[in-house]
Amino acid sequence: MEDKNLPADFRLYVNVCRNRKTRRMIRDLGVESFYSLVALWCYATENCPDGNLGDPSTSNFATDLADACYWPEDRADEWIAYLVKARWLDAKDGHLLVHDWMLMQPWLSTRLSRSLAGKKGGLKAAAKMTDAQLAERAKRAADARWNKASDAKQMLSDAKQHAKPHPNPSHPTPEEIEESPGELNSPAPPPKQNALRHVSLNETTWEFEGVTDEDRANWSKAAPAIDHDREIAKAINWLQAHPGKLAARRKGGRWVVFLNSWMTKAQEYAESRVAVAMPTQARPAGNMNSGSPAPTPRPQPAPIGQQAQVRQRPKVRGQVTDWEQVKAVLKPEISERAFAKFIQTAKYLGETDEPPCLVLHCADKYSADYIFHNLRWQLVGAVKAVTGQDLGVVVDWDEEQAA
Image 1 (tube, rainbow, N blue to C red):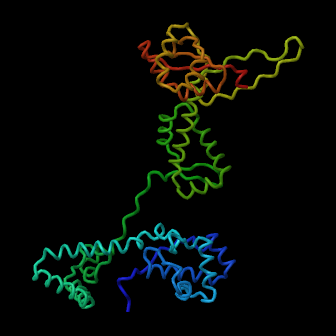
Image 2: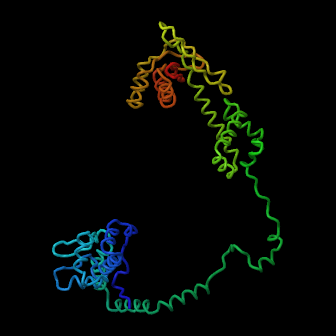
Image 3: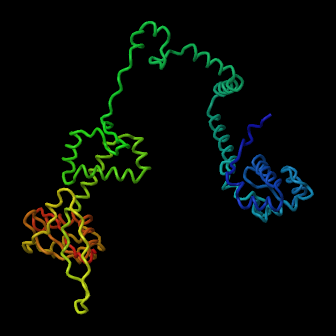
């Protein structure tokens, strides 16, 4: 008969089989040593919940432990010595302890103290109860212990007897089908058309089909600075070059979302290209005394869409803003490194009239891009704090440094 006072299990980590100590023990003592080790942990769980196996100097300690763990008794001393050396067991204060038992089995190691605390609490509560209350509690405990099966059957019978049908069953009964045949046999309503799936990609002609005038009107509002037909062609080329991306988007089928996202990113890129001024014209390079010809300047990329009308070098009308005061206001708003590396080295050229912008000059394109993309809004705020005007920011750089 099962003893309910004994613990039913103990914790065993899943990496115990591939642990290097386990593999070394199996090489040294054989595979049966692992079975005996698990048996040792079971013995400790049942007889020594705190992990203390006892005093090894007592008579028959080694043979009794070996017999309990299915290890040959004639090799008991050798087995225990190996477990201590390999640190499966720990010798401490004249006792043998299972290694890290308190750490690995915290629930077992404190089981006795918790049991005593529970008994103490029960006795304390019982001391406050009358004889009639104690008798009633004992009666309820006995009924619950001996009438488990009958109580379970009675509960199941009561549940079936008092159960009510669900108000919205997933499957109608035959009576309901006879009462309302028209509703159940009527054709299903047509599925709703997804407003985002009216565009499809024809992979034979490689063209987007179903693009409406409304789609183009939305693109014109959201992305006015780009050529939409050209961007569609670029999107198709990108899909052809990335078959994995094409398969994922073909599965989703929401090509309108894909094209809207593509147009938005193209517009953002065009705006970043337009906002930064054209680089300063490079001076002829090469050694003038040696007569070596200057290298051919790198051709600039063609403007995209409407950029040809706006990518003009700004005409500076003069220095109006107190640049040193602007830097003083800007310094606490950004990091010391960014101020020293980019703002301190930038040269203030002046302002433009149309549109009103503050013009800076940097030694290289990296610094110009960093100021525009990361420090632009802090710089605009500092200029407004000094001048009281909303001025944009245009950044110039040397072409020969960017080449």
